[in-house]
Length: 467
Ligand SMILES: Nc1nc2c(ncn2[C@@H]2O[C@H](COP(=O)(O)OP(=O)(O)OP(=O)(O)O)[C@@H](O)[C@H]2O)c(=O)[nH]1
Ligand SMILES: [Mg+2]
Image 1 (cartoon, helix red, strand yellow):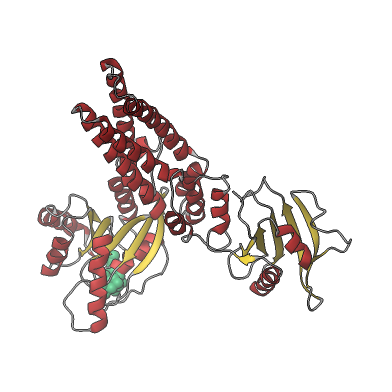
Image 2 (cartoon, rainbow, N blue to C red; image 1 turned 30 degrees about the horizontal axis):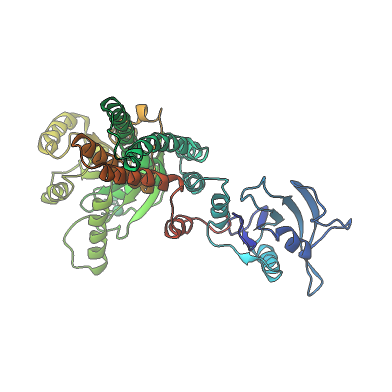
């Protein structure tokens, strides 16, 4: 399917750079670019062979003025990103020349591309399937090298191949079942029914293992959300700064310093950690602080892991226990901070006292110092190990990282399970066929074999313009 119009966008990030690229895709890409391009040797882009770069200038045809000195790449269909003709105009990388060049090509007949529209065309023209197209944005957004590798594997079709294989298996079962709808006078042979149920059960098991990978796989796409919480002044912001090794959050000796949520990324052995520093939790009459505390509680709610900070240099307070009560049902690590303030003689007795009073809230209790960095490595390792319990073995296989895919696999799993139950209970074959078809369709949604405009719009609107 080729789309009618030609789209254009600035494909490089906004701001200053060495070069910036205006990209066109569509059947008139070369013709439109030719209208604004002049080569010193009189070459035209239309006369160029595919996959060549031509030197020249962009001119405003109406004013006969040079806009920029450029290199233009001409890539002709079908061996291009979108499978359509593509022209990339490499300009000097400043927003003004880029905007001017974009304006000119739009004046000459191109349409401003929507977010993700180049990749959407790659999908619609069959160069990428839907899960591969989604991997493009994951690759762009990858926060760690491991996330990048996982996105690249998906882009190269690892997930798609698995889905294809499972769909083939399901199609065979569907065909078998539907044959009996068409010829109801035939009795289903016991042996072939057994065989069919066996292969349905195998597919069900494969779906189940895929589903399991999402619990940890999603961290590599979305980041693992960690909230640092505690009463005021225990050293939450100091801990954030120590973890990211930057002076990011304001630290003062005044309780109630942090009011807003502060979010940063940290790479722990390839795991992208989205780490959030929050306002100290206490009763307050200050409007800004009340809002800050509300946001802290919200951050706890949304966090995958909570780092509950306690000031180890003084006695445990009522507020510490109140805060720990709020995170009871979360995956929590207790970080006892300011260990540098405890003398070596005191250490032993302090530690055993704190552990005995806090161990019912979490078994993971670590002594740290935001000031000296003591315990920070141990804290990072504990975050990694307590969040990724099955990762090592799962990483060998196919991983689901995207919520949309997980929902589809879950739905396919449920429908196939229902079909199997109906088979076992000798339910009418029509009912079994409906559930099998549904399982097949839901898997088809992942790769885009079954899709709607709504799904496509939702996926591609999340992309950047120019990709
Ligand atoms: N000695 C010592 N002082 C620390 C340590 N961590 C934090 N502090 C001090 O404790 C005070 C409070 O630190 P913050 O990091 O601002 O504490 P907070 O929990 O973010 O406080 P709020 O934002 O007010 O809730 C500052 O004076 C810090 O210098 C530590 O490990 N050792
Ligand atoms: Mg703070």
